[in-house]
Every structure is written in C-alpha cells, then in structure tokens.
Image (cartoon, rainbow, N blue to C red; front, side):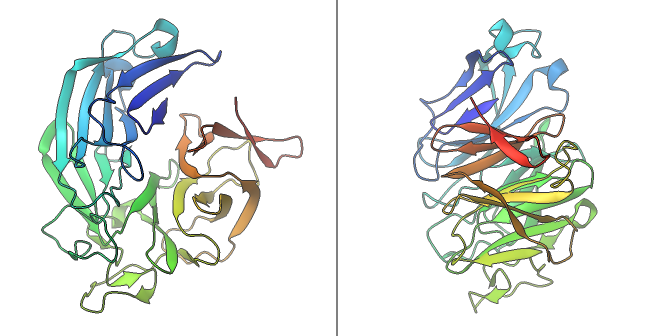
Length: 324
C-alpha cells in the first residue's frame, strides 16, 4: 500500500499490477509538509476492512478518518479490484493547524491496540505559541485513541517539534521517534513502551540536549538516544528497528535517514541508552521521505522523487535497495 501526498492510496500486488484503493484528492491540501501523510490498517484488517488516514484538509487542519473497504475480502485488494467505500468515512480526530508546517501525520497501531497519532507543534519556527510543553493542546504531542471511541483521545507524551516519523519495535516493546530539529540538532528518542505514558521529550525548552527557549521548562525531559548536527543533515526521517533476519548486519539496529542528505544510517537499538555505534549503511536516496515495514518485517523506503524501495540482501548478505 503506497500513500501519495496528493491524496491517493494505491495498492500494488506481487505481480506489479496497481489499483487505487482510495482517492480523496478533492479533500486534501498538499504541497510542502501538507497532504495525505499516513495510513494505518486495523490490526484485524482482513476481517474488518477498516483503515485510517491522516491528512491536512482544504483549510490545512489535521484530520484522522476511518474508512472501510467496499467488499468482503479486503485481503484481495489490488488483485480483486477492491476499493474504499467513500460513504464509510467516519471522523476520528480533527486538530486545527495554525501554520502550514509541522503537521506530524504518522499513524501506527501500538502494542496496546490503540491508534497512535504523531502531532507537530503547529509550525512556523521556534514554537511561537509554546505548544510543545503546553498540556492543554494536542500540538507537539504523541496522541492515542481507541477508534471505536473517538472521544477517548489521550495525550500520551509531549515535547515534540515534528515527529517524522515514529515506529514501534515489533520484537522489543519500544517506540522510536525521529523528531525534526530547529537550527542545530536532529534527534532520535527510543524508550520502552511501558515508559511512554507521560514522557516529555523536551521541545521547546530543548532542541536535542541543548537549551532552546529559555522561557520554557521541561520537567524530567528525556534526552535523545542519538542526535546529529546540521553539518550532517537537516531533517531526520525516522525509520524502524530492523527485524528482518535476512539482513544480519542490520538486525536489531534502528534504521533512519535524512531528507536533506539522503544518507541512510543505523545504530544499535537500546531503549533509553545513548547510541555509540552510529554508522551509515552505504545507501543514499534523494528526498527520502518515509520508511515502511510489512508483516514479515521487510523494510521499505519511499522517496518524493517517486520510487518505493525495499531493503533486500545482496549476495554478500549486506543490504541493498530494490525497486520497480
């Protein structure tokens, strides 16, 4: 399943055939950091046919909406010509956005079965409204909601500038967040899932480990496990802890990239512990915008240049991207 920023969700089958599963281009404002930003499938998708999308609407506000496939066999998707029933749209969440940037937009189902939503601080620069540490706004936060009960939305963690992107370690009960920095530092936060509730990642009192807005405090702020300065890159694209055993040199390592440099790197994933073995993996992908993971743990990389890659082993056992 491939999300297109303009507002389409495309299904691609193993034989290379494609079909449009959902088209909401008439409802989406896109360009820059806006658009259709993520899709998450119900953990029981093959039974329920339910999926969830995060997008910026025509006014620029964030919307999370539930849809349902219009046929009884959602596992068939592209092969059977399945599509989403537009009339099944059910609003889950709407959040006003004061500026055009820092929309967050990642959706993931967590180990507890809830739908997690990454929200940026509302945009502009420097957190002008001081949303990151404000407990009264959903901006600058990681949210969780039970889709069956939309009014159950909860602020789980705060102190985020623009989480792009976050993921749950399928084997380790941890969450990893790539949080885009301001002037100097890009950061990765990795903590155990059972420590997530109430976590404070520091923005905008801190950018990485450096003090930023001095009129802000961040009680019990959690230091990133890794940060890099803007001599290396300028906009982190968070990825996944690799659990694909076909890639032994990357297994158990957090894989991420940088949108500006295109360089893909990794380090050993140890929740709450500083990373001391960061290294590049020998791949550079222009405009690296997102990562994906399938049900078997294979890793995908998406570029705003158009291609979607899968990380496959080459004959030496090292990782190499393949795409068609």
